Image (cartoon, rainbow, N blue to C red; front, top):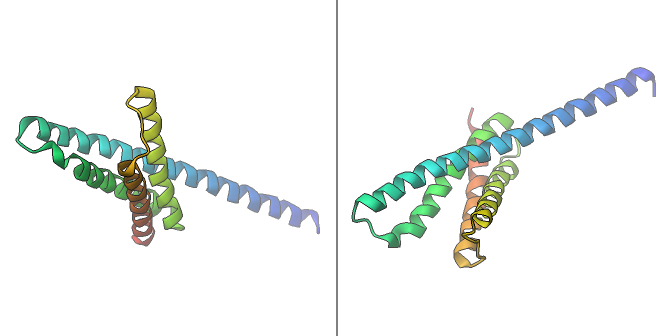
Length: 140
């Protein structure tokens, strides 16, 4: 193998590494978008709960739907710019979202129980992220 071939192999490795780092940043940005959207949506829902006669029994399904929509949007946006592996990238957005929730709730002291609601939320968020990733990859 000549020097020119070795240099071109190294350049290809550098390009691959840069794309990988760029994709990670896009996935983190998608997760951040999902988190911010969730904060906005949940704040609006909290105001609705406070100022109307909406029952608190709606809390679990509404929170699941609102976080799902947030993750769907965040994973779609990250996958639009990545343009490949939508299921993987979207699933990662959902997983990062769940990890963020776990860390914040542990720091705040609320606690994060691994009960059936938490498992359902984890599954819904990751699957929703995967669906959003597929949507994002297929948007032209």
